[in-house]
Image (cartoon, rainbow, N blue to C red; front, side, top):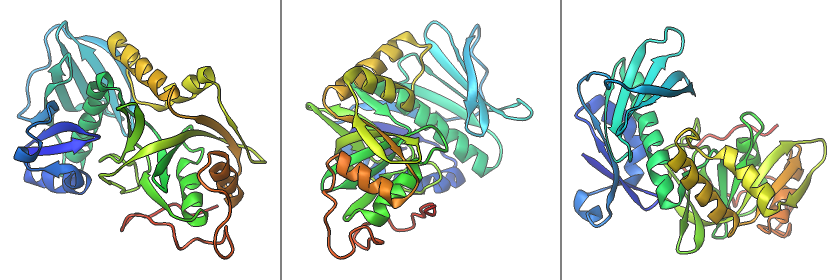
Length: 320
């Protein structure tokens, strides 16, 4: 078993599949601990990789949806949940997970080559974390995150709008920045503060960092010919955050927990809406608008910035 602490929460990876563990390692190794070092932290969930098992009898399909490169079917009984991943083209089952209704104890079977097994196991881990953590005022967001001087800023947007591009602009042009996560950071309310954590899930950017920062703000990005930024009212802020965090609206207790967590975040953190171009002026308007930088720095200011940092091996998208 591998014991991981992700966003101060304890999760367990259980598999005897060494090739699978080898390809999972770059994601999860930064979060792994000896079992004795995290024994006092209650286990949020464990995912056991086992031999193929029978589907749940009398399971009722609640929802189905596209899950990246697969089709996902969510079913449940009175006391259990079943999630099946299918090949997008053939709709043949390629992996399945069953767990208790609290998403605490789960088992899965996997098929295919090691790349497919890694993809399925990792997605089951991410789903379990998103579902199980909601009752801990902890949410998994679709966002790219930049930190500067101890505060982090989450950039939200519809797919393809330019979250990663905007992070790249900050890294290039705002002094002292670092990339925290480029796709699936974890946000939690801890002792009255809103913190963002790196996670083992970061989309196509291999940025798996075991770090945390207090959140300085959330920014919803929209493409526009000119740049402007405006802080949102609590009601508008709630509406901006809800579509950007992972959840299951068809499970009412989870949806309530998700909404409660968003309400707690909105009450403690500023949320902004940014209209911008994909150029360096966007980083200037945004960083000044959220109070991350006053626009004054050494030398040429918004020239390519050598003071910004990114983790070794992380390849960023090209600036437009």
